[in-house]
Length: 156
Image (cartoon, rainbow, N blue to C red; front, top):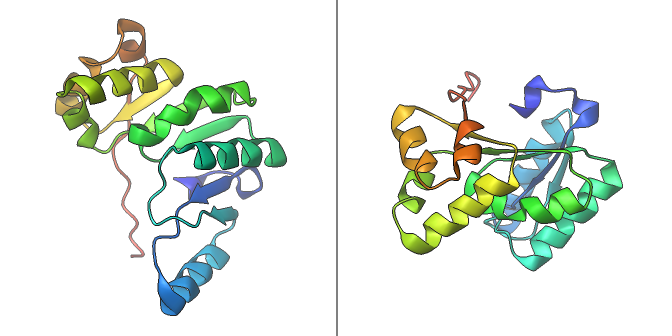
């Protein structure tokens, strides 16, 4: 999706998913091929910890970003309020299906509701995931859901 946007207006903040010397080289090579800025976090899985949230807000300010697209609504969308306070005007959160599971359990259901309230749009893959996720959201957040079929990278 990021490849479809103006590369001068995109900054990707992502985990460092490969470890070791070979993994570091592969990640660096991949990032160098991208037409936009990629900032890697030291973790192998990006989670909305206080440190990651501070880093995300610092990057938002440093690069003058006004929009944020969470590649995984849950749990990354939990950073939405902090990013909005830091200046984000538009917040979009993409679901991949696991959020339907979050909607079934009381504690994670409450977190999913917070994500819905904190973002402008939550995307969904199909009607099944939409119905499950929407049941956990406020009516306003559910009404802002938008279907976004997955893209296929034909090069990989």
